[in-house]
Amino acid sequence: MKGSILGSLDNELTMLSTQKRAISSAQSQAVSKIAANPQQAKYLLSVERQQKVKESLYLFLLQKREENELSQAFTAYNTRLIEHPTASPVPVTPIPSRIMTFALVAGLFVPAGIIMLIESFNTAVRGRKDLQDLHAPFVGEIPLATHRKGKRRVAREVSDNRVVVKSGSRSIMNEAFRVVRTNLEFILGFDGGHHVVMLSSMNPGSGKTFTCANLSTALAIKGKKVIAVDLDLRRASLSAYVDNPAQGVSNYLSGQVADYHDVIVRLGELDVLPVGTIPPNPTELFFHPRFARMMEELKENYDYVILDCPPVEIVADAAIISRYAEMTLFIIRAHLMDRSFLADIENWYQERRYPNISVILNGTRSEFSHYGGSRYGYQRYGYHYGHYGEYTDSAEESEKRS
Image (cartoon, rainbow, N blue to C red):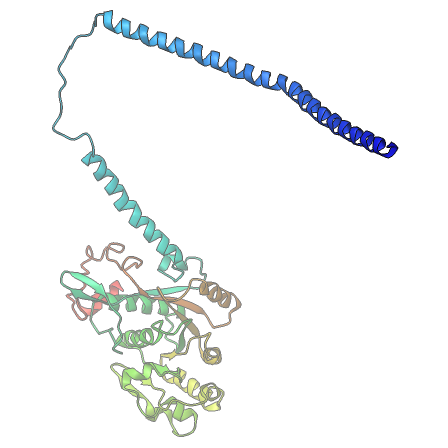
């Protein structure tokens, strides 16, 4: 019985503990709800205030709308039509004059900007103005050859190995070579001595051989005894003017020909010493005693010895030949040679690397040339150039003008 009573009491205590915990949990929930009441009250109060503000604003706007409708309904309009509206048949936009102005401005400045951009990337020598910083004497300017196309003259290359300088001709090419000849004689002097002039360039294709052949012809036309020697033993460009003979200066220097006089060819009024056989060792031939002896004899027998040499920076031939020359004519081809090479020519002139360096500007176009007609006023002096060989004055008068 005692055990049963104790078990009952334990069960009762357990039940009471469970009830106590349930009551404590309910109490905690009640306390949490009571603690949350102020926050809910605050939120509800804020909502209530916003509702009152919006309600008052809505009522105010509603009142204003009603007042506006009443004022429009009971207010008499005091406006009246003064003048009837008019319209023009011309459209307001687009404006043709403004479009034409914009088109004119764009047509002028856009091409000008493109041309300036292209010219800024063009680093080649364009004309006489690019040579102003050179201290080397300027012998002359050879314009680009032209041919007539309808009423216009179109520039073209002279690539058929022909001499354009003719006796008595008054074409622009002949006048240009006469100016070069006169300046060359002025630099070398009019003492009637014997002169050796070498022609070289910086780039292949500068017109060195063309200038050599025509300058030699211009000197020969004046009555000078002239010989043009082709010393470009690798390309033999000058020899092409006399149909590339089988024997020439290379055969003499190598001992295959006993006398170089036997290989001299006549070209118009001057003598030409061609290359002959293309040698495998051009540079070594220039060190042969025959070459020095030949140069001395040529200088004694001719008034002018014109040497067509290879470009200076490609092979060493020009530096070797320069020991026998009295003057070096550098041919600068317009629109071919880079302007950065002008500094090298200036340094060679200051250092006297080549004897008496002078420059000739070749292949200038009319827009960059001094021979455009308007610069020198050829028309006012009776210079009216046509095709090669067209002239009206005598050769003596043309020579005086030159």
